[in-house]
Amino acid sequence: MTWYETLAKPSWAPQASVFGIVWSILYPIIFIAYGYVIFRVIRGEYPTALLAPVLLNLAANVAFTPIQFGLRNLWVAEVDIVIVLATIVWSMIAIWPHSKIATAALTPYLVWVAIATALQSSITWLNR
Image (cartoon, rainbow, N blue to C red; front, side, top):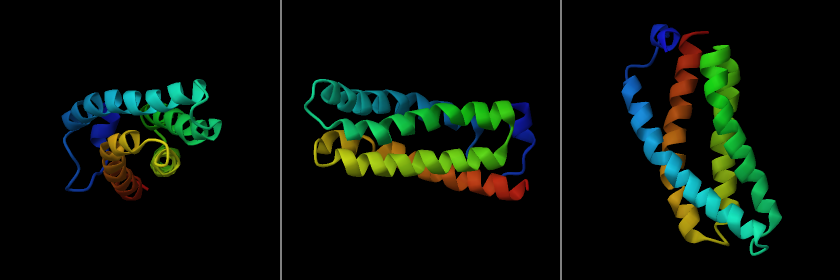
């Protein structure tokens, strides 16, 4: 985290402590919404194609921290977070016809990642 603290950030960047709080709320929501969809796919009640955006999203989400803080590569982290954002939108569109509730549950995740994407873009630009 020391490296991250040295980066130039926009004036509207949240304090580092906010990230832990937000993610501790979002991860259970993501787990329940995506878990429900995966469970229904496994039972054959939902099409297998729903797994593509869900699993891509989860993989990109998990990859972000090692890319950003392990590799310290802002440009690759930028690409990764755009993939996270795009796959949230894709998964919400794909899930909507099958479960409006699961889709709605992902809305806070979408909002936070949209903000995080704008923040990452700003940090990447400011530290080019």
